[in-house]
Length: 455
Image (tube, rainbow, N blue to C red; front, top):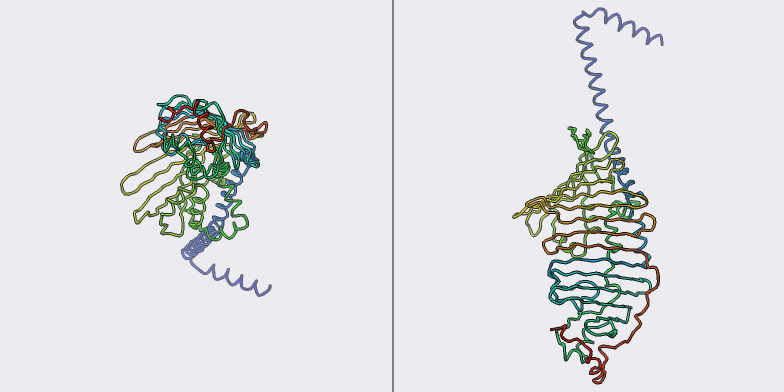
């Protein structure tokens, strides 16, 4: 301690011996060094907390998506139980050449332009029983009512405009059975049969559980990558951009820092495999992803809320570049995911298309209401899809109203899904084994058969 005191006295004596001008210069240099040191320290500290900040923001977003408010769990529960009743109507203004619904063996080659379809579908998935009561108003034909009852082995149908009896047939190897029946000698190729049999698993139960699960992408991601999030997070690089940009939220502007994330392309592949249909996956398989990383910009406020996400994907298809830009705005006031706007720009060598997707959630007295609008804004402003979903948050029973205006499909309708209130029963009435009729049975049957329906 004495030695330290002597040193301090020596430094004080030397300091007094220095001229005033040199003292000022020394103070300036010392102050500058301190400021630079503090600045460098703050930069190191800020850089060290960038990644945790982004992780915190992403966790907040994931927790919101995983919460009860944004979950379709009640509706998914109905579909998983498999005791389902559905009804609704569809107005069609397009040509259908590949069949629609459970009765496509009768309608496979018809032109349904300007037609109306009203339906009631009942399903018991565990027992593998399906019942459909469908009323068609088909352009060029008129009214057509079809009742169908399907199990693993038996298909029973009744078309009053064709015959008053219920027509029973084995649902397996249907085409071969028809071609070896007496009815084939009369109708031939005018009655189209499917190449394979008709099974309960192939009947349309819309919306399907796997399709609805695609809506809850973050929930599916957390379930898929549970236990691997730490490993995945280590692969993600985070860089804070220098500029601050304002983002419009609910009519106000928020100052947001911009964070540049570099993620593994594995996440893009997972997303596409999760959300796309099998046909779309086959098309995406043609994409050549030259880079193994994916860049995303996040716009975050000081409270670690993400208000905007932006990314650019540039795959190649058969050597030709394909350019896709996605900008997502999270505009919800109480919850970020209550209101989402998505801007999508798609370019290839010959054309460019721009879309805007608006999704809004509202809650009213035990109901969740979801409003979806898809607009093509370039090269021409057209509303492509408009859908309103109302879901009972306790029972899951739901109703969706929609309008669709696509290049190959123009339609509007309503679809209701609820739990089945009573078991499905086999139709009660006169039965005719259609493909097993002998000559006498066929003559008796054909007396009341409307063959003109197939002209």
